[in-house]
Structures are given as C-alpha cells and as structure tokens.
Length: 311
Image (tube, rainbow, N blue to C red):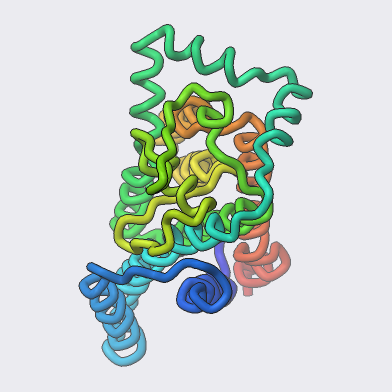
C-alpha cells in the first residue's frame, strides 16, 4: 500500500528538480559558451501546458482523478523529454577533465577488458542482433509500462515509474557532469572519428555531438534533436533495473522482463559504448534510488495495521 500524500510530495520534489534543470538550461548562455536552439519546440510546449491545465481542471474542479492523473503524467513526460537531453548537452559543454582513463583503469582492476568483450560479441552476429534489439527497447518499455499502469488503475505505480525515471536521469546527468568520459569505442579507437577545421565527424551522432560540444565546435544545442550524452553512469542500465522492478508487479511479466532487461544491460558496453564501471555504477545507483522511493512512499506498517484493525 502506498501513501498518496507522500506520492504527491515525491511528485513535487521531482517536478522542482525538473524546473531546476530547466533553469540551468535557460541560463546556460550566461555561464557557458552554448546557446539553446528552441526551433520546433512550440508544439511540445503547448502540449505540456495543455496537459497541465487539464490535470488541474479535472483534478480540482471536475472530480475526474483518472483523467487528471493521465494528463499530469503526460505533462511530466513531455517536460522531462524537453529538459533531460538538453541539460546533458549543457553538462558536456562545460568540458571538465575526462575520466575515460580512470574508468578504464577501474575496469582493468575488476578483470574486465572492453577490447576483448566487444569483439567476442561481434563475432556472433545473432548475439549482437539480439543485444541491439534489447538495447533499443528503453523508450518502448517506458511507454508500455505507463499504458499498463494507467489501464489497470495502478496510478501510484505509474507515478513511481515516472518519478523514478526522471530522478535517475537527473542523477546520471549530474554524475556525468562530474565525471565526463567519451564512449569506450572512441577511447579504444574502434569507432572511426575524424577531425577537421569545422569539427569532429563520426557515423554516431551521440559521439559527434559529445566531441564537438567539448571542443567548442557545437555551440547551439538543438532541443528537438538532442539525445542523451551520459557515459558514467549508464542510464540504460538504470532504466533496465527500473523496468524490471516495475514489470515484476505483474506475475506474467516478471521473468520475461528480467530476461529482456538483463540483455539490455549486457548490451550497454557494445551498443552504448559503456565501460563496465558505468554499468556497475548504474546498477548500484538505480537500486539505491528505487529503494529510497519505495521506502518513502509505502505506508508505514504501524499505520497499515491501525487502518485495517477490526473495530
């Protein structure tokens, strides 16, 4: 059983964190060399405002909590979609010292060699294909979970999912600002990159944006084209833990979700260019955040007992 008051407080905390992230993005030109390109954001912003208004109207005056909850959740997802990618670009543009060598050293101390792992996976095309598919399910899994929780009336779990996703993303972006690192495939030279007077070029947009932001070639952050630029910790890994826990609320989905998200996490070094340290940090941090969220929103045992005690 979950405490609706505490869930509301968690919503407020997460939204305030999102507003703080948005303010960092909006004020970026004051303290960094980047400006924000808002081209194409008109419709998402209008949709965000419309969903927020619907949530207020149906929650406070129309007495339709399900509609209000769905609208509020939609507004949250739109808002965070606009903010999260953008603030990860701002973080990279600060050009803090790279931690790639340190992450590699930690991997080696743990007995993991990225240059051995990646070729082994690539030598089995069927395995690489499976990992690629699993790695690509992050956004679909989020959407499916939101729909299932909404359809089954599990609004508390839906709020936990959305809040957990946003808080994990913000935590990952903050840590990636503190400990930035280029992708492992770039660090080890397995991904072809080229540099000209105009900047870096590479087949992978994420890597190209990362390198050009750090070296000052990319100074306009395209909000609608931004993608996550987080290396440490692995956000895909964090989402894998979050989704497995959320799907586990349904007995029929528990083990398929564990298998799928296990493959997603295993794919991160190859498909996401992550170090093993990124993956381990993602596992630990996401587990800690989920534990804190569930510990906070659950109704204390004493209150539950008193609520259900016979008269």
